[in-house]
Image (cartoon, rainbow, N blue to C red; front, side):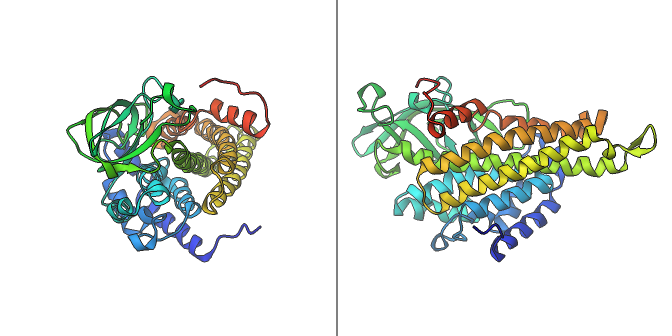
Length: 395
């Protein structure tokens, strides 16, 4: 068991840190305040080849794996970019690139992967629905065959990046649940080009991460060619899980990166800030111990997350990957929230001021309690699939 990064992985980490230096917290504070996409940041990621990390070399990418993508994400997040260091890459490289690499047809790979690798083709995934929420098996979006075309209808919610994306991964039912031989049968995945008049996109005002729009999406009689289906027909549930695991790992990395970023800023501040007896507040155990504990726990979650990504890169089953991805997320989120909370306490009243950025990281890290899966659903997974306890919810 080797915990040392390869020379190639070290280069990725170094490159990510260099990029982050050019896009410090001040940059993201401005983008957040103005609700603007980080165009310059996206171009820098593309130029460095980060948008093609998981894309095979024959399609213009680097031909590496999820582990290398997580390394890049963590360094970007921890060195000043916060959630943005993960968010943009998840939308395009995980939802688009990773899904197509592992499950797309050769024609789909040739069509989409070169553009994704160059950063010219942004992606999004239309999964969540207003009435289904976490229970994807209750998806009401339908795809019905009409001659040599698919006709798709449905409503999606919380679809990030849909306002900019040129490609969309759509999850729909091709067999109604009541007619399916089992509940996981009948889910299919489709690739659609955007913009399209049949796809209406409406941004949702939200609490944070406003350098990326999150949208309601209405799909009305969207006609796609027969080859828009990402095979297998009716068997997309398992392909979807193979996309959700990398999403989960990415958000775990976000919690680790944001937590480390907040801790580093708190440490820097508490070394300088003096009150009462003239000692730096960083010497107070009431601040030092919780920050130290959060950091140690973040490191633990990070290792568990790399175990999940290593299994994923080695083609382990979605269930084996999910085991470690869920446990890593559980630990990382709680530690990340604790890290940012105590960073805010370390700054005192300044922690509430926008100019110190901690309040923004607090808004960012708390999203990871909810997405891509709630902490409660991750606990349910551990209870049922790892501990072997009775199922605690019904689908």
